[in-house]
Length: 265
Image (cartoon, rainbow, N blue to C red; front, side, top):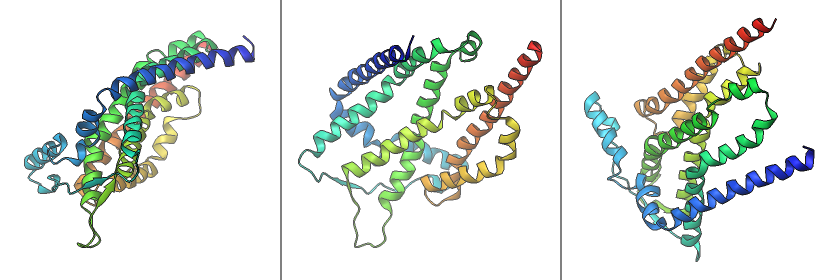
């Protein structure tokens, strides 16, 4: 295939991916009012299931700090078409999340012919594992990070005379950014795996930089949670576990590469 043929093939992969996202978005749009009220606004409701889990964990550990206070947050729409455009945005975001495995599969089909048989074998199950990690990141953000973030900033006041009235756009941007960002962050093990197999990243380097990674992850956890040590650790520990998993994956990938190189020599 020449360059234009590759471009044409890529165009059709993109078109099919966009169609899949649009179909999923249309299905979401059919129930968008319920989805927005029960899912998108879920962490802003006092009966959200994560708050019950946190309190149960707090009682188990005899620590009241896990029981978050009542969410005091009012919303407002500031534009004529704001709520309709919000329904479209929610539908597209959730449509992308639902169709993510198919989108990933389409791009994998485009890349696969350019790989050697050994490289294809090395990437066996890539669509499944990348999709699984993405969904875990989305769920972790929605059920763990979002409740703490929304509860803290919704109740934070510089003065009792100032009431928090949040615009729909601001709330949605905060939620969507957190959810999609954590979905991307949880792809770290797969990224580390491929970088290690091509020789760009080594487990020795990751171990040597562990202290800096811990500092960065701790700062990240502190930013997205209330200023409370236990709350911070609740987010930091899974993120650090993800890093250690990446180190282990890098070790296995590099050892497999070195073993293969030794057999070839």
